[in-house]
View 1: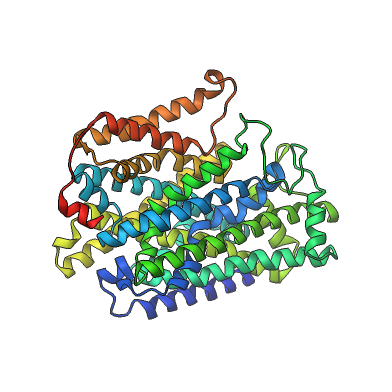
View 2: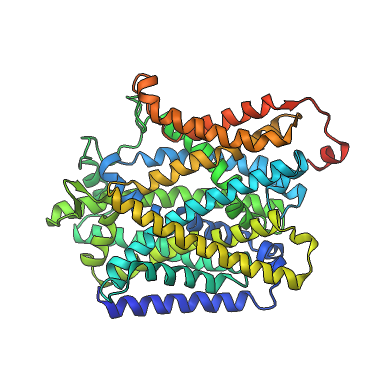
Length: 505
């Protein structure tokens, strides 16, 4: 695709986002920024959450990984379903009864200020690292296929990317994002569907014919590209129980215990609307992820049928570059435009909501916004928003340096690994609060929440030698949460909760 077309598409796209921001942020105050005044239509929240959940890493890495793992990722997706049911039936009613703005206020009510600040700090750490890593991929694609031809240095590409997000989120916050994410998710899903249809038409097959061709194509390990379930090797990271239960707890932690995605749910008018949103979102997410995997197989079938050289790094295929390379160089202008819109939408839908959620979390959890005047709130909110934007910039540049030094890095695996370490303490804290009535010796809570992930990191690095070749996968999050729970049990004592708390939960 030519540079003028790419520039025209991006200018038009961001002009629409800024226009949506202008419409939705009129007369907005800090309450609108944080809660959307609890007036968001549940169906818009459900659809828009797809873009925020998937991100640019999913958009590119999930199709690419079909070459090495087939459709094993769908095992994780099936686990998500159970996790989302737990969120809808256990966590969301709790948050609505407590009427929280930040979900970590629950920890303050249940344990005290130290636990509250610890949980909020781990969210900020988790979401900042995860979202910046996701956004990194979008900046790389823009650099490779646009800004490099214009001789724009990579650091400036990152600055432009983050500045665009800041422009359309700084005033309206979550109220704006509910609508911009819906707009962006539309392009994300359209890109996958259109590229899959184009490949099927080029190969002169229908959907079933395309699926059959993919099933007859082998992964690098020799299995079928349509293989979903892996039961043979308990030591493998692809072993079904690891993937399924890991996916279940990843959903609980990365959605139900995450201010970013729960903030959207809490903008719904009632718990009933929020639950309808969660179940609709779950259905759409399962279908969309399967479409991504189908597209991944179709990419490799197309490349083999047409003799297209895949992007390589030494002797290995650069799987994260396969989709962008084929979409922008081989599928024609229409596919190229929708790919560009899709990768932009998926990356920005994830990053913009994260930026708003981080701003919300820091303002509510650390700056005591409920006790400040509106004028002071507006000033501090702006400064915090700018601060997290600059933090994103630094992390993206560090990620670029790391990936350049380790070109075989699996980005989606890296993000899930980060989640395993950083969301584990949150999983332990919330589980301990919900399933026990014990009181914590609060000053030891940060120590437990720091030492447990460090212990899990050491165990993960030595598991093969200590456990007869066993490799941890997504179940590392479960272990992290369980050990945190046990550590909290050691620093707890029996206590009768106050009647006021019991009435609220």
